[in-house]
Amino acid sequence: MTHKSFATPQQLLSLLRDRFYLDAPEGVGEDELQRWVKEKQLPIRLKVLNVIKIWISDNHMEAGDEIVGQIEQFANGLPESLKAREGLPLIRAVQARKSGADGSTALRKLTLTQSETPPPSFLPPNRKPLKLTDLDPLELARQLTLMDAAMYNRIRPVECLQKAWSDLSDPNKAANIKAVIKHSNQVSNWVKAAILSESKSPKQRATIVKFFVSVAERCLYLHNFSTVAAIVAGLESSLILRLKRTFEILSPKTQAMFQVVSKAVDPDKNFSVYRDQLSKLNPPSVPFLGVYLTFLTFIEDGNPNFLQGETPKGEKLINFGKRMKSAGVLREMQTYQSVPYNLAPVVPIQSFVERQLKEAADRTEDELYVRSLQLEPREEAPERITRWV
Image (cartoon, rainbow, N blue to C red; front, side, top):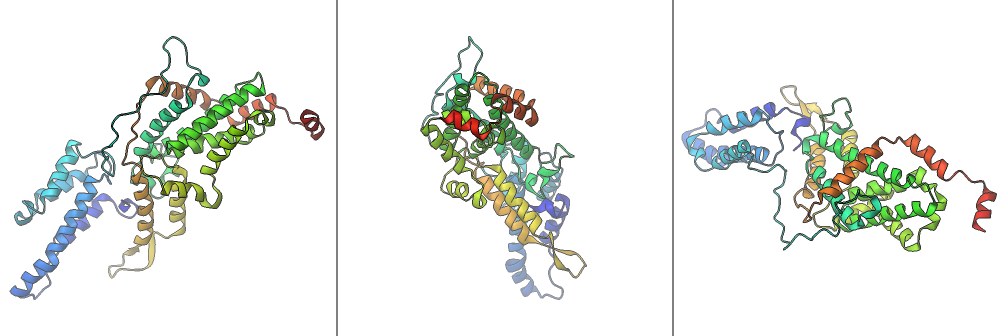
């Protein structure tokens, strides 16, 4: 899962091959050789075969990697005494990998036990263009969840190593993580732009705020923490929170709901509330990716890649403790890639969302802040008192 942080695939396979063809100690008698083969060589060979099988079948390598062909050569060249039985799972894994029949995620997709997919709670009419307030918050939350889950499930372990997502010079590096980050930022920008586009009255803006709070609450019910965090980030941005007249109109129920969704992704105490909630849930779920990236950053920056000291050949000692910590985070991330949502996609709503995100992406933060000031100019203290009276 983490080998690319310290070795190329070719180096790893070469070392595994050397380990598999381990030579017997010199000067070993016939009886001792048979015992060595049984107690030393065979267990090592079985472990090597199992490691390579996991490597190739659990998708810890890039699609189309030439290493697949090299592994096939290794598998076909196994001793006949092993090929028919112990080597057969590896040979089958290679064949499945080449045919694309082994699946594309690190964990096998589990079969859902639900009897039926719930029908959409809202289907857009074909006769008129959609508006945000035409949508049912529950159905919008479902479609956002399907979109988020699809992007999250495409993340591969290699993208999470060595802070690859922070390398902006190569758009193809950690592309799936960057796509999730971009989508979350777009959702936040959409929330801000949608609220600020309502220029007629604070009441109309409050209606949009209430709508997004309802969507976030339903996303929380669906265990979609990614969209919850994105919506809350938009609602809690300085250019939205400053709209005092808008928030004063919100009902106590909406304000209480806002506090609930905000608390769910509160960064206080290292996202303790969020992590506690997530640990008690069973998939399907879409975690808040930012928390995992924070943990991986701490691991990367806080631990050396190599330990002090060298091997007899003068090679550096790999810090496997660091890799084990990273692998623990990656395994938890994969847990939520294993169970799909039992929801029906509604293409018109998803297309509407994509259009809205694209339009909102053209609005800069400075532009939106100017708009916020136009809608509700800064008030001096006497003005606020007069308005409250």
